[in-house]
Image (cartoon, rainbow over all chains, first blue to last red; front, side, top):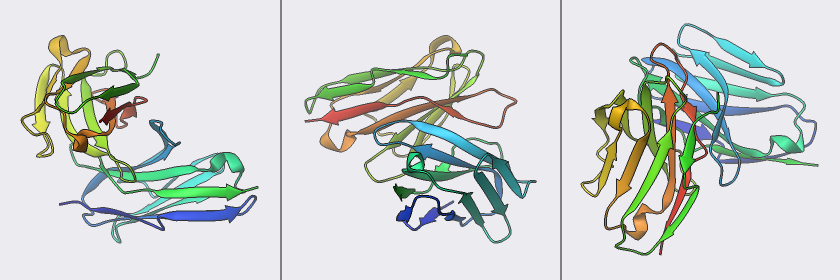
Length: 112
Length: 113
């Protein structure tokens, strides 16, 4: 059974700092990995998707990497802003691309 | 492209009542997924449809839960005899058959008193 872990559960950093969020998964036989953002009481916004054949994806100040062999992914946020405050979730899908398995998320607070 | 929509956005009900949620996927997305998210946790898979066929159900989906997708368009999730433990955010997602990304709706927050 696939298990996804995100550490730390919560993180507070001053505005302007670069930061890294971590995601690990137990079964390396994945089809893709997605990073999502969730604001309090809201749905999920997809940030980046990395297919199993890829090593990283970039969008603006965000960069996500994937190391399937070690079962790890990182989300790098450059020059953090207060608007980045949210919960960040990673999720993996098996081959067949159904049934995302999510981590419990990292609650990020950017201090102005 | 209007995105995935869910209604209602919030539902408050008393224990023992039945509730029904609706999800409208992105047009032409033939796959539709339901997830449940409790406070402080990540979403958990409940079930998914390919067109009108329900192909997989999680063991989380007890016999009080039923999902349908008539005609392969919108989907409904019904919970009968609600319990306080059913309080959660219910999320719907859809995906085009050849696509790789699931697109999520805003969710329906259920509170059972």
